[in-house]
Every structure is written in structure tokens, then in C-alpha cells.
Amino acid sequence: MSELHEAYAPILRFAKGERFFPMRAEDFMQYSALFARGRNEPIAPRGSVMPDQLARQGRSTGVFLRSVDAGPLQGPQVVAQWGKRTVDLVYQWTQRTGPGWSESLARTAYKWFSGKTQAATELFWWNKLLIPALEKASSGKADDLPRLMLPQETRDEAADRYASLSSPVPAYTYYHRQVRDGDYLCLQYWFFYGYNDWARGFEGLNDHEGDWESMMLFFRVTPEGKPREPPAYITFVGHHSRLTKPWYHSDVELIGSHPVGYVAAGSHATYPEAKPYSIMELYNLVDYATGDGVTVDHDQWAHRIAVSDVPWLTSYQGSWGTRFWLPVDAFRTALAMAGTLNPALRLASSRVSREIELPGVSAPHGPRVGDTGDQRPQWAGPVEWAGVPRT
Figure 1: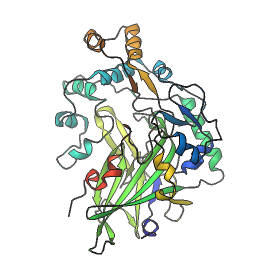
Figure 2: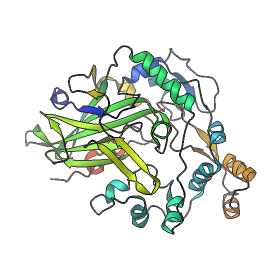
Figure 3: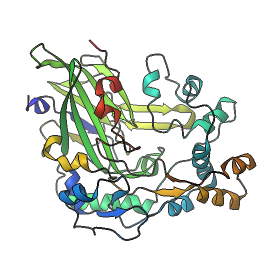
Figure 4: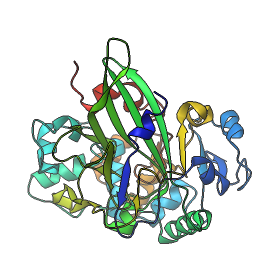
């Protein structure tokens, strides 16, 4: 069973213009410093961060690795570079107390919405953030969607550091994990990228340091507890959502026993077909999974690392890149100075004083830990999360 991950190792096809590819987390650490929330100086300087140090000092969600010097270190510096509409969008999200995500909003956002895709649409990380914009759009007053960007110099430095490490040939890496969940064995492939430049590079929604993505295979289990080959289902993952298909579905491309995943430019979401995926036509939000760039074949993985062999990876609860915190008061100050703070929001928020993590631009936690500090649902219960039918 230990070779199962090799027998089904994925083939990844990237889009033209992609600058970041799956790498070892340890290599990312080589050019990163370790910071703690609210501090301007690192607790471990660049080049000194080791796995055992992450295991010791990384048991808090308030620590993070930082791989760049260019660009903002604190939340107020991020917001200072955003336009008023972007600040207002995020501020309204912090203050929202009304109805949450609904089917009507999903139909406004996703033209491909159906009963079959409803569960997947509910998983996108940006849904609650975009409620005010979608409510306005549903009344016929749609505006352009603000993007959650980091500066160009941050992107360029991240690319330069990765390129320097990867010369002359990138050491393509996947992490693998097998977990029994009910009547299935789930084989998970996890890919780590040094940077997500979806917004700045490909007109997507957001940018951030670090990026954990995955693909999953689901094998039915025999009465003896062994995986029944080939897999029954495959799940392609992106933006906290998923696309699950039967193994022999016409959309799934197989070369021998190896599934092909088309990786979207910048966002690194993975898809079964080579094409642009229109996520939100309303806002021209597209994942370009065109497959016309670099291909990582199933035998080109330099490192195939069992998650169980690197326990520090899952015990580390900090972020894989800079994480930004901001007092809500700072939003109110910025909007009031611009003269755009809604009086009703000003009154409602006068009793609120708290700090938030900036959405979209804050780096993710690792494969086990989600944005809230809890286990990712696909880690704890992959069958239910992926929408795989129970047998």
C-alpha cells in the first residue's frame, strides 16, 4: 500500500506564464524568516528556520513564515495601498450581521449553479465576503469587483527567490497521505507553491504568499481492508471548493493509471480539463487552466514525501507566508477620512472593537489546519467534504 501514491502519481499541466511550481516546504523555509503577530522583527532570521524550530515555536496561529522583504508586513500597510472600494468591501464583511449565504446569491454569482453543483458552490472562501456586492448585483446595480492585491514588487521578489532556488531544474514535490474514511481509502496529494499571484498576474481575485493545494483519489475498500483498484472517484481542488468525478468519467484524462490535472495560472486550483474556467462570469473571474505551459509528468517528481514522515508539517499551526491582522477601527478611520463610511455602519460598529485577519491576502496555514485554526474539513472527513457517495 506504500507504493499506491506512485502507481497513481498525478501529471500536472500548467498554464503559460506560470512562475511557481510544487516545491518542498523545507526549501521555502530556506529563504524565509519566522515572525510573530504584531512584531516588526523576526523571531528567527532568514536562513535559520529549521523544521524542529517550527515544531517548537509554531504551535500558535499567530506565527508566520515570511519569504520576501518587499511589500507590507502589517495589515495597515496593506489597506493603505488598496482603493476605497476594496476597503469598503472588506469592512462591510467585518460588520455583517444580516442573512448569510443563500441559494439566490449563489445563482447570481455562479451561472453554472445547479442542484448538482450547489454543495461545491457553498465552499468557496470568498462567498461571505462578496455578499454585499452580490446583493447589489442581484438588484441590477453590479459594479466591478475590487481585487485583493499585494504589490508587484512582492510578487517579483517571491518569483526571484523561487527561481534562484530552482535553478537549473525545479525539484518538483508532492506530499502524500492515506486515510481510511468509512468504506473508502482516501489518497491525498498535497502540493505547496511559494506564491499565489492570481490577481496581480492573471486578473483573479487575490494574491498571497504560500499556497497549499491538493488532489484526492478515493478507493473502495475490500472486506479485508485493502484498497480496490482503480479508484472509484477523483477530486480536483481549488479555492477551498472541489470538483469530484467518477474515475472513468469522460471529463477525466488518464494516461495509464495516472490522472492529469490542469493547474490554473496563479491560483493553482486544479481541474480535469484544459480550458479557461469561468468561475464568476458576473465579475469576469476566470481560472486559466489551459495546460499550454510546463508539464510535470508522473515520473518527474523529485520528492514524494509521506506526510507521516514530516510530523512538524502538521503540528505547525502558523502560516506559510505573511499573515495580516488589522483592527476594525483602522477600517473605520480609513473610510471616514475618505468620506465613504455609511452612517448606519458607523453606528452599528461603534460598539465593536476587534482585530481581523485580512481575507484573500493572508497566507494559508498548512495542509491540516484551516483559516480558522481548526482542521480542514477535507483533512478530517474527506469523503463528506468531497461529496463522494457513501456505499
